Image (cartoon, rainbow, N blue to C red):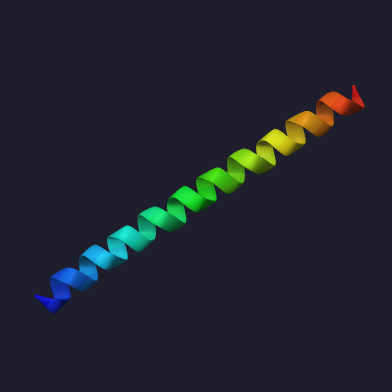
Length: 40
């Protein structure tokens, strides 16, 4: 039972980390795109 809960918690943590990384990557991409547009 405890192992199952731990496994679920790990999965949730992994999903949160993955989502945070995706959002961060999108923000970086937007920043790079906007700065590239400014340079043009």
